[in-house]
Length: 53
Image (tube, rainbow, N blue to C red; front, side):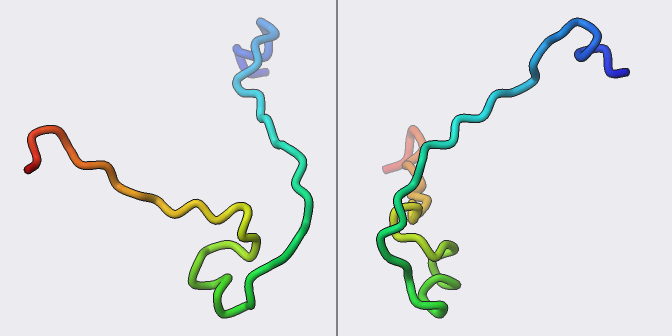
């Protein structure tokens, strides 16, 4: 048995909000965006590092 389980500790707890299905991307667009659900489409935007520019 894992030592964390022996102490009754939880390693993580997930929070997954309910999602209402409204619309979806076409298969081609979904492959480009990485998801078929526009509500979950959150592109990564890299922040500028300190000292740049």
